[in-house]
Length: 205
Image (tube, rainbow, N blue to C red; front, side, top):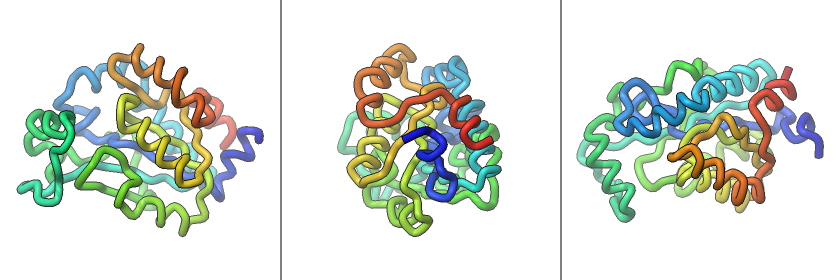
């Protein structure tokens, strides 16, 4: 299948993964992730993809993390969840500026937002899958952070649910950057179509 057919805007959605001010923006608690994202121009490339998707008529969905201040309903059953809770403090509490999307995405009123208050990935026990199916989506384009866990989990879940997956390799990032590149080459390339941002934008131009 050629990329233009795969990215048919009537059946394609861009999924942004935790591209929030408190994760990878000006309020980020983890500077290593923020700096890695800037190094590979991930926020700017993600923004280009979202803008192109909207212009072509594709769906844009922002998969975000936000929590109750009392953390009711959220678990710390993995080391990263416990560490993240301590590091972030109240940055990602519902209503805090840290939950806002980074400005590079140019958020639009037509975009969908699917917040989660638990876990590490956007498909499990959220409404994401049903919303995509209701919109007739068959292909998802994954952008954001991080390749270490969030993007990898998104891709695995999407494939298991029957979606075609495209991952622009310069619109995602891992920490360290070299580790993310290794995961892209050795794992994600076996699950998804991996292309540069320019190819996605060209397909929708």
